[in-house]
Length: 75
Image (tube, rainbow, N blue to C red):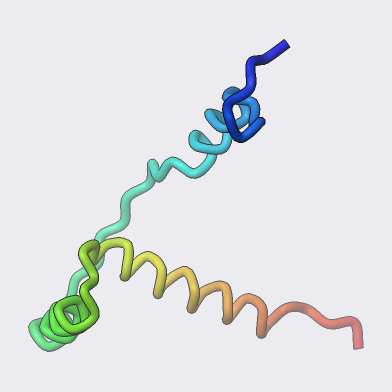
């Protein structure tokens, strides 16, 4: 039987979840001066420490919204 943590969750399960969320694929994006300036201004104004997390989150949110809006319908 697996040991449990204080929260009662199996550590093997947590390890499996961490492994599934690990980012192993890299993509590069190029910005022009104005785009980069806008990103830097946003980060400074709103206290964003991780620009990569900001860009990743904005990209994925946009993609998921578009996929949801264009799902196939039966009628």
